[in-house]
Amino acid sequence: MFLKMDGPVRSRPASLSDFQFGAVATETIEDALLHLVQQNEQAMQEAAGRMGSFRETRIVEFVFLLSEQWCLEKSVSYQAVEILERFMIKQAENMYRQATIQLREKKEPQNWKALKEQLFNKFILRLVSCVQLASKLSFHYKIISNITVLNFLQSLGYVHTKEELLESELDVLKSLNFQINLSTPLAYVEMLLEVLGYNGCLVPATRLHATCLTLLDLVYLLREPIYESLLRASIENPIPSQLQGEKFVSVKEDFMLLAVGIIAASAFIQNHECWSQVVGHLQSITGIALESIAEFSYAILTHSVGANTPRRQQPVLPHLEARALRAAASSNT
Image: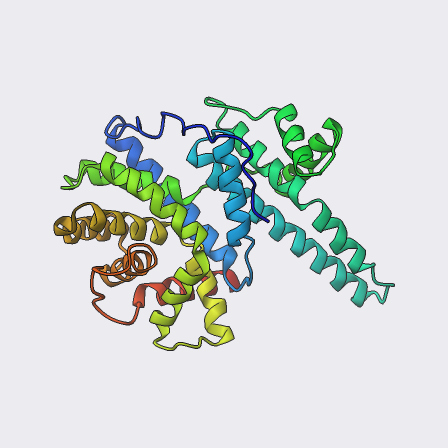
């Protein structure tokens, strides 16, 4: 399921290159960072023990290419992926709940084949609705019109009406209780870059920002192999058990950890001589162990530039295991 680009791709919005750091008061930054930390901990707790994800590479690539074709900001593409992820998880949970109730009450089961087919047939419509909803959250820049969406769907062979498009958006909104303004890893990256600038980081935040965007795209597209390598490193075993995989789900939803890994990898690419200083700042800001930051940046760089990456300090990630276990324990209380 790849997006076919029929026309010339227009350039990205200028807002990406004109991103400004150092324009916000330190008190505001501290409050915003604390809020992100709280959101991150809650997300990790909710994800504990949950298996599966809808951030599959082909889906992410489709969203990224569609956002590029529609000249949307990078933040919109990440938010669209996260909205779609939450929505599909809700759909799966609802199906499981219905099946459990039917078994308990010994009712005649639904035609799951037909239900699955219905979900499959509407998936592209739901995906595009998530992109459109994400664009509306960044209304200061650009909103994708219904006409644009319907023309795009028609070009793929999907014929829908405006009413069906509105119903699809409403289904997503209702399923998520209208809470679609979700945090993305980009918010964590940009917040940490802001703090790094105030803390006297040797590598300019504006230079790191551009590289961070590229690497964040990469992590979204190579999510499974990158996190699989992290899991194997954390347990010192090439074949993780099911229990270890379940505990590690929380780590996959740790946006703060992802952000420090992205920034550390970007710092190495930009100026490897300043890498240790940047990692030290990140450890001081977030409390994440130096070994964990180094391991994550190592995994990202290994899957991107390959050789000449920073050497790992230790094979075990105590921070990753501790965060996963803490989130799992919190979710069970």
